[in-house]
Length: 94
Image (cartoon, rainbow, N blue to C red; front, side, top):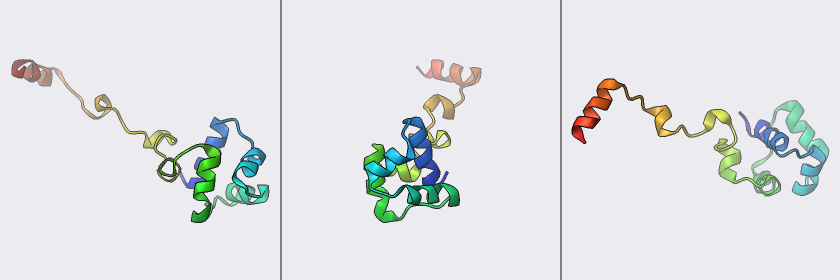
């Protein structure tokens, strides 16, 4: 997911309108519309204003951690599969 897509996902999740976001961030509504229509990203100079307006960290906005479902950090149980043989070894070790 690119940054502009992430911005619109956050807006939707927060039930915030484009106009409200534009006002909070100090951007024109047309600039924000361009990001959506052209699927382009805002310039680097605007990232902090966007983060402030959306109440997210730059890391969240840039990487998607905590925003994109696919970028969520998997839990230990999602990464490790323990079968019966593994459980037996663990019990014997313990």
